[in-house]
Each structure stands twice: as C-alpha cells, then as structure tokens.
Image (cartoon, rainbow, N blue to C red; front, side, top):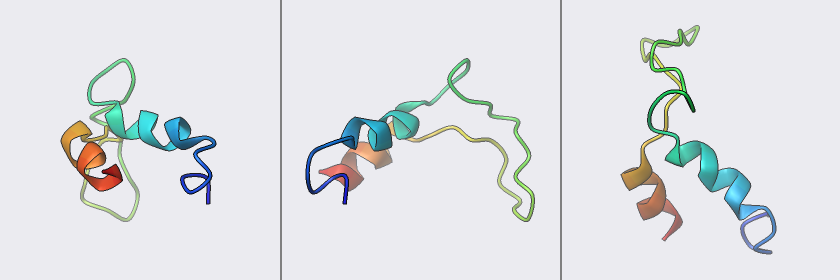
Length: 50
C-alpha cells in the first residue's frame, strides 16, 4: 500500500540498495536458510520497482 500512495516508498527501496558494509552484514546467519547475509541487490531492486 505504501508504494501505491508514493508515501514511504524510499523506506522500502533503501534496504534493497544496501549492498555492502557498514549498511549490511554479509556474514549474518539466517536461521532456517542456507543463505548468509542481509545485504540487498541494487540491480534486482531497481528492476523490481520499475
């Protein structure tokens, strides 16, 4: 809903654009998943929102 009203869209996009420390932790353990880290992928994020 935030994206459709254009209010707060930057709050959803900012975490996706965090691609390296100190904004994210590439070694963070995610319980229940074999994927490590909490970094975003800017290319995928921009493609998704466009």
